[in-house]
Length: 416
Image (tube, rainbow, N blue to C red; front, side):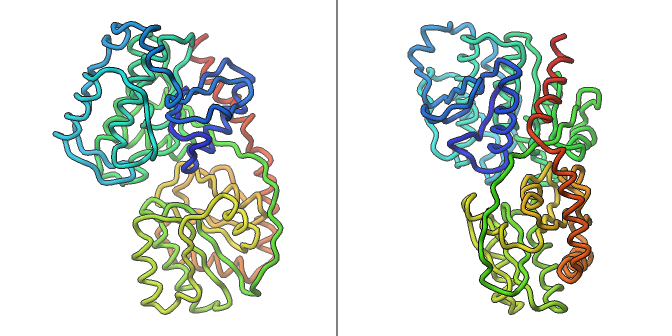
């Protein structure tokens, strides 16, 4: 298995999901997880956790032959612009980086920021070392999480003939829209064409893989994420006003501008409420300026980045949670809100709305309906209770053990 985010380096839902799946899956299989960076003191029961930052490259060179990597080290498939979470360079620069990585000697893997400006180089270096490392391991299945790890998955399948499973937690389509056909999009598409099975985290994402990426439905097996139980924070409220919250990246994908427009409409009719926008991203400054211009800055609060502990504190005092994502493969934060007994409003363009039926849903752009839903949940306790009670029933079915068993069934299709 190959992952990009994992303890002690977790940037978001991808790391949380990989950890949850591994903890549940490890007792069922012989699991080796390869990640860019690990802490030698951090361990997960029943699995081998390998951080490339701690792999002794000199030892690796002695254990494997150059032939093992050269057999498939010149995979020059992709020469378009890269746009994962940052603006990147064009064709010539990508080709240059690719040539440098694949023709240089193997060296110790070092990484600080998972999504820094050198991400493409790190993804290629990660692939190069991972392929060499795989030659020292015994395995039946190759399992890669998201585009950052698809290259080693493809290369190792080419070398060994072992079946390749791609776990899709998010897509370039989600981040950049249907018009973007970047290097990452091309990598995702090529990898999914080459894979033996694809596990999207929702039926919603599965439909995108089929209809936008043109992948056969016969090898798409949606499996929803699970969630870890939480101990609820107990905080005393410091205001009698209602609190509506949004948390996540403040980017186009998450729809924060639609949340802001709905907040403006709510405040015109229900002033006794505060809105919180928690997170960071490229749309943050623009939304802050709009709040000042609309003279609602005292009612619309931006927090910037919050730690997990602070997010839990926010959940402990919230009255309504809103997730207006433009395209959300799953939406783990929505399930976290349900755990805290908070009624939720979710966009129809989300995977979480498939598993939480005790919620109100609307199209992400429908700010009038979003505003009406918020007001209804603030004014009608009976509606709040009905949604919360129904969502708690849904929550009982969402766990990582169930998710791991479904993943295991996909493995069985490939090795039996």
